[in-house]
Amino acid sequence: MERVELRTAPFDPYADLRRFQRSRGLDRGACGATAVFVGSMRDFNEGEAVAELFLEHYPGMTERCLEEIVAGTLDDTGAEDARVVHRVGPILPGEDIVLVAAFSAHRAEAFAACRAIIEALKRDAPFWKREKGPAGERWVSCNTGDR
Image (cartoon, rainbow, N blue to C red; front, side, top):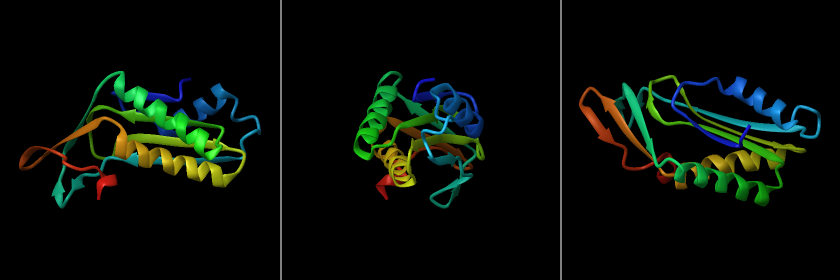
């Protein structure tokens, strides 16, 4: 399995995590720590109800950006491996949007890598959010990392 994947359909982050661990041999004892972040869609944003989110991206560019984030983070933190799965297209409240997992021999590197990846993803990855709510559609002008 690749480290980075974009998906248009809902996914089970924990089943994906187990498959990734098996496919990369991370379940054989070399990595004693796995840090995981799963982000899900809320039914509100900035005090308003949200019925659907449409996540736009640049195919090819977005994957390359995420791969660079992961590779740089692994170099910087010393973590062994990482997995990023991110939804694109239409997303409904309660559906998982992103999985970030980092694997290391020790917890400090795993936690550092997981946090660095999600923060860089939110700040640097080319995604654009369009929300649909009672008042119609609107583009989200800033990401949570911008606040």
